[in-house]
Amino acid sequence: MMFLKWERLTVLIFLVTIFIMGQALAAYTVNIVNLDPLSGPMKDVGDRSVQGYQFAIDEINAAGGLLGKQIKLIIEDSQMKPDVAARKAIRAIMEDKAQFVLSLTSTAVAQALMDVAEKNKVIFAMFGAESDFLTGKNFNKYSFRTCFTTGNRARAYAEFFKTKPWRKFYLMNQDYAFGHAVADDFKKVITKVIPDAKIVGEDYAPIGQKDFGPYISKILASGAEIIFTGNFGADLINLIKQGSQMGIKLPVRFATYFLDGDIELSQTGQAAVGSFVNSTYLPTIDTPQNKAFLERWNKKFKDTAHPWPTANLGYSYNGLMFLFAAIKKAGSFDPEAVIKAWEAMEYNGLGGKQIMRACDHQIMMPGPIAEIQAKSRIFPFPFPDNPIMIPLDKVAVPLRETGNPRCTGGK
Image (cartoon, rainbow, N blue to C red; front, top):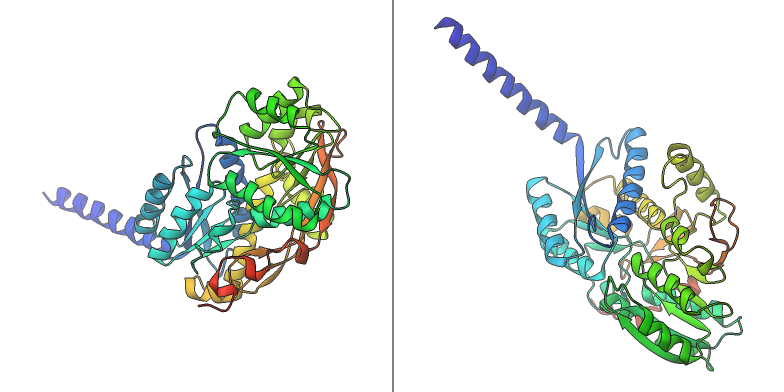
């Protein structure tokens, strides 16, 4: 009997010790939840986002953490479904005490997570959802965006094309909110900057479209010189490869948002040469911050599938480090303190000076546009190089056009 009592006491002491250790560990850890597609046709986009986030977190943790705490990334599959993302975010906030929410892919998912952030009073950072209305008419103070918007991209490309000879544009995009925003914002801007520009065609295909043949036939018949597309992932790869097979060749070119990744360009190959990309991040940007980042990344990932940080590997890293800098400036993880610190904050990011505009929580930064070169300095396949940096003020959406009352004198 005495032995059984001691055995029970030992078990009780062990359980109490585990509980206390868990509580102590929690006190020194800050949980962040990420929601991106980790299944389905856009899985590789989500996988790369997570890799970029984790690299930033590993660097912060190795340097002693953030305000003395270690950062833990909770990874969830959004399935690119707003309801799924919202449900998982709420669970992470309630059960795992997640204090920050991250997402890169999908305007619809971002909108759902904005609502979750506002209701639960946590910070939501979006690194790739680009529809202007998210920081415009649908703004809420708990959400921040660290990537370009469709309005930014339209302005960058308009500035670029006004010095070029092409004037016939065909708009080919995905058939959901983001794809329509890509086209709408380009149409709003292009003829203001280039009065003789013409939209010679406009089409939308479902996400995950396998056969672009019917669309390509219409593009070829239109006489288009530039095919303007916000397609990403498999939809961009299939559009360019099938276009090449059906006869889309130079001097006809694509003007893209997302032809900036090693996966996309290794698959499109020579079919992409001569086309353009305007990207939130390119590893070929020539800044001291980016050069140092490339060295650190390549040292760790040299012998992996992603030896250089292309596309959303860079978006997610740069955006998350901006958030971490705002937390450091605030000296607190309290959302109200972080909001105050991040608004109007300047930061030397990978692409140079960037500013978080106070009224709409939209990042402002230079816009790189690069042509896909047949020979790359860093990859054995075509890649965008020698980017032209469109100045920050030329890329920014004017305050009066944001649709956000905070930017135009409202509350």
